[in-house]
Length: 261
Ligand SMILES: [Zn+2]
Image (cartoon, rainbow, N blue to C red; front, side, top):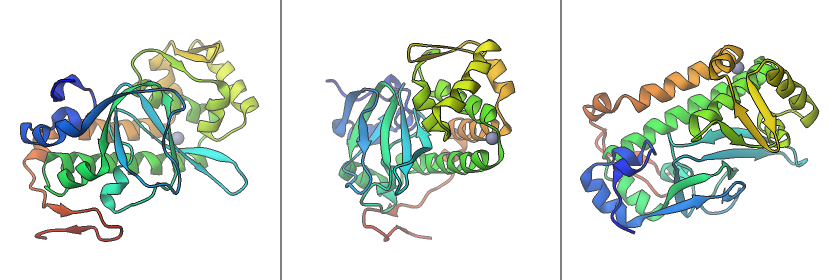
């Protein structure tokens, strides 16, 4: 494999690395194919690598002591899986697995920690991603508490569509129910309604997005809030590059400290 070229990827953190950062990180970045269901992190296990998705999507899944599970967040080309290790985490808190297959870049946690400590655009863009993820997770919590299944399902389908290369999303209704936190019968009724309205088509484990604008109309305002935050960060390179960010020491659990502030 040749040297890593930032413009060759659509991952929003890797695509704007500086030449110096590419020189340091490039030799440690491994291009990988990601299959549906592939486990990236297991709860309680060490975080040995970070994964930067391209046209693929990972799901952060929480579970309670009765075995029930629900999606907490999703990560695609806007971010990176496992970045909590840069904030001092040693072990994964939740299961993270691939829900939409595709590709990405894998980076050893030790190499990421070294680069993060230098305080350049790599650090800056990881921190911006954390803000995007925090907004997404908090909006999802509010949405699950306040909004109806139709709203939530439309929002979730749009968030997947944003991160996938194409209109045919490979997913089952069982999986859909897990992701929006309801049983299969409920999600089946909601999906059927969307199909009757021409918004989606469901067949053999694939959901086709037929009418994106209609889905946006159907979704609650939470989708717009999360999307605006993500787009602001994606378009803010020139502004953020002018803002100095102090180098950060990272790597030891609970010892996150900013130098020179
Ligand atoms: Zn909502």
